[in-house]
Image (cartoon, rainbow, N blue to C red):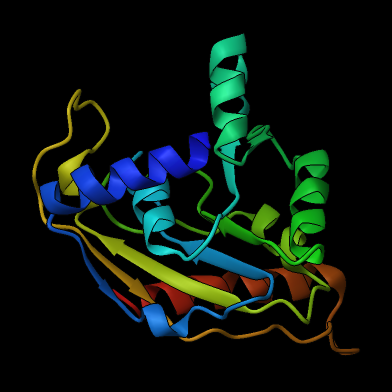
Length: 201
């Protein structure tokens, strides 16, 4: 119920406020697990992308969001998974993999945190660890444009700046080739994720 109410509020209030335009929604697979990978420019990114995705989507959030009982309750109701951003959070990665393996949808920001400049940052290794080996899961790249100008770091209230969200064509990863060791394999995935997202800019 909390998830549904928040999604409806985003559609009713945020969509006209930010004049949100969405392209490529037809690229979102139906009735299957989906991993969405997106650039991360603002706190607006998760709810704006989430309101455009059919059904419910799971998110990843820094563990600091769960420090009080009220905030922990709220973010868990929004299907948010607490993630420790210091190092590789293997427990969080395992939880995310279980979500995908059970056929649900997950939104991942491979950069790990919001950009400070508006430009894409390098992809963190945790993104590759999460999806590595899940060859049956379709991955949909997403690029959100305008959210940085609307609500960058240091701004207290979002500005009414137009936001555009683009969903790219889904793709799947292949198994690690015999010619690649594990480190090179994960590195190749981070490069692939970066290129897929950047291509939508």
